Structure formats: structure tokens, C-alpha cells
Length: 219
Ligand SMILES: C[S@@+](CC[C@H](N)C(=O)[O-])C[C@H]1O[C@@H](n2cnc3c(N)ncnc32)[C@H](O)[C@@H]1O
Image: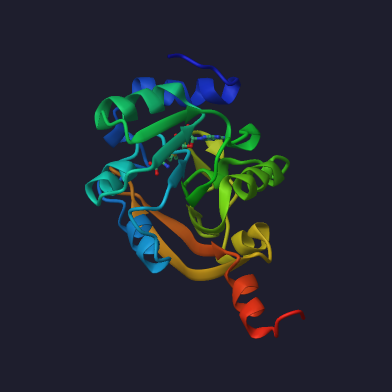
């Protein structure tokens, strides 16, 4: 399965074809922050999780161990997806090879997880990323996003990135999302370089539903 979605997929395919998964700057053995923010959001093993730009990461392996049974990974790189599927070898994990900014999901998910993808999306295509998110996420879905913070690196994998604070991410998500938790963390690359990350955990529609509880019927 070699599906090419343009120059960007060529870049990422080359990365995954030439480097072992534990030799890239973003490698982490335990996705501790992702799992803790999932708990903070009240995510359960019955929730359908979409890992956006999953690469060959171990996040879905950890979710499988915790009993999750509806997992989808999406990545622009077919090589990354092949590596991940070969490793997990589990029919509970579905895969999509696509650019997140042009993907038309045929279903919805309860959790949108993105570690280190949004920061690669150019300002010109950012609205398309959030349009995909809004289409693919269920009415009360949860969002976990982790990207380089304002004091984080300015490039990654030879590509320039946009850095974010929590306010910036929440502004892009829009009013229908409530912030549940934000975190600044430091990821240490396999060669010992610290990278400052900004995380947000947010839920859609909470404000709207709690407000409707306060309103008298017929209001
Ligand atoms: C820095 S890696 C992070 C991988 C993974 N999330 C992790 O935490 O290990 C970024 C990933 O995003 C993918 N990616 C980059 N731009 C993308 C896009 N527009 N649509 C989908 N995936 C994309 C790359 O192929 C790569 O696997």
C-alpha cells in the first residue's frame, strides 16, 4: 500500500523509511501526557479515538492495553501507517492515509488526539484543519492537542512550525469548546534535547449543555 498525497507525504515517507521509530525527535515510549489528559477529560475505553498524524507512535498500543476497541490512526505518510499497523497487528485499529486538511471523515469520533501535527499546518491551511476537526468530532467530543510552545523549537524534521500557547489553541477551536486542562511540559528527544510543549484538553458542547440546564423550558 503506497498512497502518495503529494510533496508533504514524500517528505514524511522518507523520514519513516530511513529512520527507526525510536530515532526521531518526537519518539516517546510512554505517552504519559496524552493518557493523563484523556483521564482528565473523562475519556473511557468505549470512546472512539482518532489519533491525527499518529505516525508510528505507541499511543494506540497503550490504548489497546487499556481495553480501547475503536481506534483510528490517520497520517499523511503511508510508510508510517504501515509500520504502525504491522507492529500492532490488531483489527481494532483502523488506518487512514490522508492529509488532515483535506480529509472527509465518513463517521465521527469521541476523541481527537493530535501530538505534534497542528504546528506543521501552515496558517493558510489552518482553517481546513479545524474544519476537519469539527466535522469528525462528535457533539460532546474531547480534544487533546500537544504542540510546540512559544519557547519551543522553531523547526522540526527540517520543516518550520507555528508555536502556540493554550489561549491560541482555544481561540482556534472556538467558543463551542471548553478548556478542561492545559499543561506546559518538556519532551526530551532521544539525543537529550529538551523541547517545550503546550497541551490543551478541551471538550465540545459542555458549556452549551450546562447553560441549557439553567434555562427554563421553552426559553
Ligand atoms: C512529529 S510527527 C508526530 C507523530 C506522532 N503524533 C507522535 O506523537 O509520535 C508528525 C506526524 O504528522 C504527520 N503529518 C504531518 N502533516 C500532516 C498532515 N497535513 N496530515 C496528516 N498527517 C500529517 C507526519 O507524517 C508525522 O507522522
